[in-house]
Image (cartoon, rainbow over all chains, first blue to last red):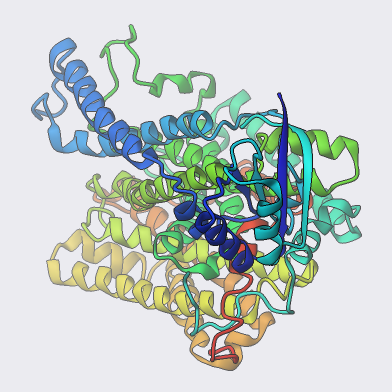
Length: 175
Length: 458
C-alpha cells in the first residue's frame, strides 16, 4: 500500500520527546516513532501498552496445570511403578520437572506471541520510512490525512522542536 | 531514566550514536586478522582430535575410556559439569543484571550470552556420549514406549538434568538471538554489500525500530529474563542433585545445590572476564569495555571466591562434625591428604586464595594479572570437579573395590575437542556477530556523562 507521510528526523532523544509532547499539545496524531533503541517516554506519549506479560503469566499457569496433570496421569494412572517403595504420586520430585517445563513452555509460547504481536518473523522485508532509524536518527512519522492539522502546522511544530530534517515521502508501509 | 552516578560514563570517548554502529560492526566488515585465522586453525585441529575420539567412543564403546565399575564417571562428567558451570554465568550475568536494572551490563551481555550458548552446547555432548550407544539417546524422552516401564522415571535427577539442560540451551539461545535482532537490522541498513544485506536482513526479522516493536521487545526480554533467572538457579541445583541424591561419601550433602550454583557462576564470570579482556585488547574496544566494567567483574569474583572458600571449609568441617567415618576418610585421607591431594590443594589455591589478589586495586586494574587470574579460576574449577568426582568414587565404602583413575587419550581427546569447538565458536562470534549489543549501548550512551561524578570510582 502506498502511503503519503510527513517524516521528522531528530538527532537526539530529548528533542524527540519534547517534539512528541509538543505534537500532542497541538493535537497532532503521530502515526509511529522509529528509534535506534527503546525510548521509554515515547510509549507513554503515544499511549502504547501491551498485555504481553499477562499472556506470559497465563501460559505459565496453563503449563503448570498441564505438566502436573501429565506427570500424574503417566506416573499414577496410566502405568504406576514402584521406584524404591516411593509413592507413585511422588509430588515433591515432580516439582523440579514442573518448574523447568513451565519455563520452557512460557519461553516457546512467548517467542511465538512476540513474533505475532510485534509482526516480526524470519525473512520479513523491513518497511520503514527512513533506514537511519536503526543507526543514529529518531524518526517521527505522521500521516497528513489523519494528523488532524494542516501540513504546514505539523512541519512548523517539528522544526521548532529541533527536527534536523522534515520531509514528505511516498512509501510502502505495512503498519 | 536510570542514572549511574557511581560508575561514571558507561561508554568513554564522547561517542555519537553513529560511532557506536560503525565501531562495533567494523570487525564484521574487515577481513579476519592473522591471529584469528591461526586461532581458528588451532581450534579446528583440537576439534578434529575430539571428533576422532568421539568416533572411537561411538564405534568401540566406552570401554575405550578408563572408567570402570568403581569410577563410573570420569573426565566426561567432570568436563560436563565444568562446561555447564561456565555456561551458567553468561545468562546469570545478563539476566540478574537486567532484572536489577544494572545498565553497565550492556557492553558485556552479548559476549557473555554467546559464551553460555557455546559452553552449554559443548556440555550437552557429554551426557549423550556417556550413554555409550548415542543413537539410543532418545530413550530419555518421556513418551509411551515398549521397553518395560511405559514412561521414564520422573524421580531421577538424571532425567531432571536432561530436561533442565535442553530447556536451558533453548532459552539461552533464544534470549541471545532476540537480543541481536535490532543489531542485525543495523547491519542490514548500514552495509553496502548485497550479500550481507540479504543474510543479515533475513535474520533481522524485518525489524524497523518502531515504538510498537520496542515495547513488545522489552516485554519479551523481561519475561525471558525473569523466568530464566529461576532456570539459572535450578539447572545447576539439578546438576548437583545428580551427586547429592546418591549415597557416595563426599557427595551426599545438602550443601551441594548452592555450592554448585555459586561455583558455576564463579567459573562463568571468570570466563566472561577472559573473553572481555580478549575482545577489549584485540578489537580495541576499551571505550566500551571500560576499566570500570572489568573492575566490577573483579569485585564480584572476589566476593564469590570468598563464598567458595567458605563452602570448602564447610564441607571439611561437616565431614569431621558428622562423625561419619566414611566422610572423614574421604575428606581427610583421600582429599586433604592421600593420592589425589594435589587436586584438592590446587582447587583451594586457585579458587579461594589466588582470586583474593583482586582486593588490591593495582592488581584489579592490571589487565595481564586479571587475565591470568581469570584463567586460574577456570583451571581451579576444573580441579574442583575432578576432586569431587574422582576422590569420592575411587575409594568409597568397599576397599576391595578401590581403584585408580587416569584418563585415556580418548577421554582427553573429547575434552580437547570441546575446547576446540568452543574456540571456533567464539571466533565465529567475533567475526560475524556484533560482539557488543549496539542498540543497548546506544541506550546508555548519555548515561553518566552529565553526572556530577566525572571520575570513575574504583
